[in-house]
Length: 260
Image 1: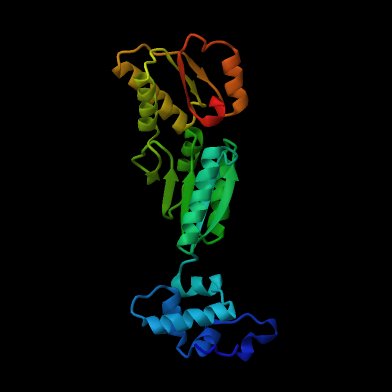
Image 2: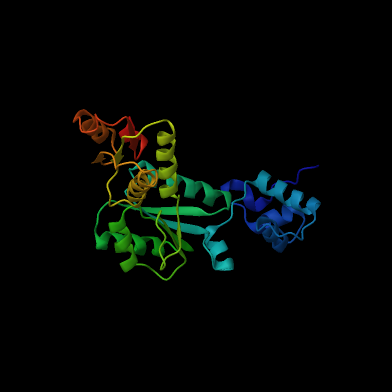
């Protein structure tokens, strides 16, 4: 296919517009817009021509123009509590990856303080950026309660392992996973199973602790030794060195770092 010449308007460093793409592809700017928005009623030959022009001209959509045309910024705000911990950090990375796949961008605001003003400021900062929706990564119950007091009216999803009748939530079933892990240890013949838990202010730690207790109870076994760490390898080493777990034949640790 013969390549169309680059329009004069794009020469000299000027950024090409949707109208330049339309002229290069020999279509209307509305057709270019439909291609960009994935409209199904476009001939494949036309779609290919438009996409080739976009590629050759290195055209990128203006977020401001898109927001004016669609009343959407295609931006998701993420308020993330305790971002240095592996769980919240990996969740944020997954949200960013999923958002990019749908042509959304992500703005994040991190907080590690149990401070209502910090959470309120974070929500206000994200809303000021014109986000379309808010995602809250709330691994701690204390942070979740503070968010509830300062929530906004926009579409919001809270990432936490415990359901909430007043919020849209999503999360991994930590309770079921813990029970499966303890059941595996029981199946290997262990009868004295200790648990090294994470901070019980964390939903995940609480669910894993409860799963450990319930699986032992349902198997007719006594509750084993219990110790609480802070998710770090240092706390796991300290608890192991203290000797409190010595009588146990197996240890169910709440995360990999403490297990190591």
